[in-house]
Length: 470
Ligand code: BYC
Ligand code: FE
Ligand code: FE
Image (cartoon, rainbow, N blue to C red; front, top):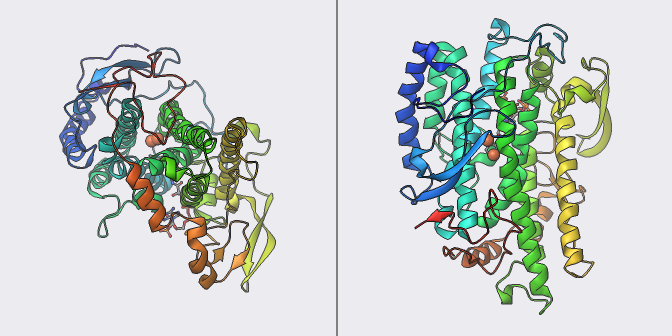
């Protein structure tokens, strides 16, 4: 695999130039993509030099190149991990059969739907984050925002490549559709709930990249097990980039927590000192964790069972399981019957969304424990600690949607939820306070007062580095 940024219009390791029709189709899609980027991509800063990483190959050491780039000149490329000889489908009814390098006719619609759903989230997130540059708390953070944005753009390219190469005319139409829907638009919204939620400020941004990009991690892992090999190979490489997005979220929250603990030393009223109190951070955590849990789909899902049976979408690290068919297992979960919660066994295959959500919740808990250690080290009152809400809290998809629960998962009435919701979720006052903090700090080496600087910079550069040149 060559590790150079080629002169081709669309950098790739899929030998695009040997398939003229496909190359032409993608080159025709490119200006539409750029129009979309200019219309609803990052507002402002398009002419600035930003210190960005660009994927240039899939080599584990040396896949990325760092340099100043103007965002519209970013080289959005197509990179798949190499094909493995004699690769076999790892789960489901077709377990042990050779993987598919073409779309199996009987699964065509299912597969297209999965790819379109995945693809739709990528541009949606760019749209959601488009206004944040103007209020970045530091140049380091601004650069990270734009890094996430250009890579989500590349993830869209990854899905569009699959649609164009494997799905003919309807694939090309879906690729257009991906540029036509708009996050939060009443008439043509993005497909999944969380991708129509506003990301109004940097606190939303860190919680989104922590919790929502982390749904991306688990969905991409599940797809990287796919028997449709081009999907497996492209999602595997996307995960390499995804790690940075989650890093931005997890450390961004940790830096806010660090700053809060520091301010608490000079007095309990953190807001008075221009910081963000733990209670408010917890409410943002409750909001984005619950919105992101919805992205795993219903607890009991025949779609999930079908995806698994077909060999299109596996489990997180399917290798670690002994039984790859999951035909006779059960999964015990709390369901609602006659208005009451009760434990029930459901067939394992229909519970695949919940199985994946379990891996996700565990990972989120690990991060919560880390933030709590930051609080502890910072000398914060032991009564002030973060927690994940129960997974039934504030759900809009699946079996808990339409019911109301408190943070411990106790069922409560709609009236009680309405009365207490701002104990648990950001209130208009909380949001107004957070927005009052969103003043840009765009001088190299300087940072806003509500967040601590990072412990190190990007690619060995110091924090003071001019990550975005004015
Ligand atoms: N919002 O059987 P069910 C990322 C629909 S993030 C709205 O329970 P299923 C990224 C569902 O479509 C990763 N609608 O769900 C992160 C179905 O509709 P129909 C994105 C929803 O199909 C940050 C009905 O409800 N990747 O990469 O098992 C920045 C019942 O559905 C939602 C993927 O999602 C929702 N949240 O599971 C940038 C992977 N949930 O059939 C990027 C591909 C469900 O009644 N997608 N519905 O019309 C999938 O695998 C599945 O579609 C889902 C849903 C897991 C999302
Ligand atoms: Fe992505
Ligand atoms: Fe991401």
